[in-house]
Image 1 (cartoon, rainbow, N blue to C red):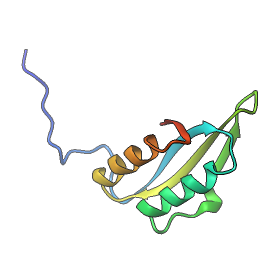
Image 2 (cartoon, rainbow, N blue to C red):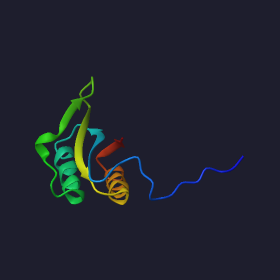
Image 3 (cartoon, rainbow, N blue to C red):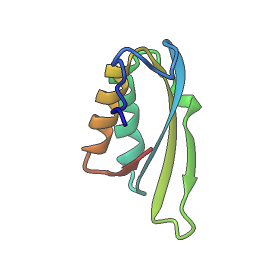
Length: 93
């Protein structure tokens, strides 16, 4: 059996592309502004009015869906890394 190899240039995404990202964190006032700030760092055209919010049943957590314009795999990787390491963020999907 041969190992599966892939070309780093291969991608299932065609760039540029609208790309939704789900972010979850505790429901605190600073969470949404922090996510907007990060989104603008990676996509200067990001429109904050397109954010979708969903509270958890108990109201302790908030799910935020942002849709950015993805321009490269590197951009997405760095965006996920930045979101994942933010202290207010619990999960990034």
